[in-house]
Image: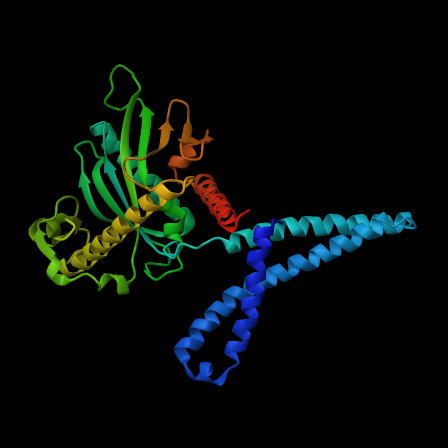
Length: 374
């Protein structure tokens, strides 16, 4: 294990001792807020320190077995036993090192949250709108595989049955918007430009066309963030919703559009059957977009200072190509190519998601190493 990792892990052992001392003090125990904060930190630090202690024990076991094997007087039976111990300890050390590296990586506090997925048709006209519908299906099927709840909260249909724009809300815990679902952490790298190459249904000559859509994935903020928006900065408009919904949706002005005047950011919702529910949902989307705007600006600033990140998630970034004639998906950020496009379009996104997460973890680890000086 590299020196900088050992140094980081040693700090956890030191901090564990400090926390155990603090938690034993009577004044801390009387301050419930401080006690809970320290208790949570103690749980996190204990997990890392415990794995680090096990790693060090495995190193000692490996060293002892290697010494036994080198012993000139070792009998064949003892040598075989020592080699078995060496193999076992080496395997466990490798596993533990991977676990410890992941534990040390900086955590994005939004990764555990639910998310909004916005899909917009781009270049390509009707074919782009149809591709937007295909992407919506892909994400919906992926949610079904993960046991997540996906709900369309805003849509603008095209003439051929695709979408000019559609917004999907994804809940990872049976509709509960509290943290812990992991939706955003799994889908955040989907933000950017998605390009499709195929023969459109409207093409009579059999020629392959290239179209594009843009995707934006927004973390659903908690209620504490939502109340920070000044109501005086909002303009709220109601209008008659369009699309499916029968008589109810055609006769009432239940759809809501909210504009954040300082930034010009707009969010709307027409899926709910009441103006109140649509207003609450639109406000959540608006807050998520404002939060994402701040995040993107910070990401752009960070990217100017350090290279190697997956990307800012900007809509102008072309991140992926879906080539139907070749059955190929290519993610251009990490040079990933998979020849299982039909399965992916049916929601089999695990290989893509895991590859992007692994790449991000490797980049974070490299950044930690540089920051530690090697």
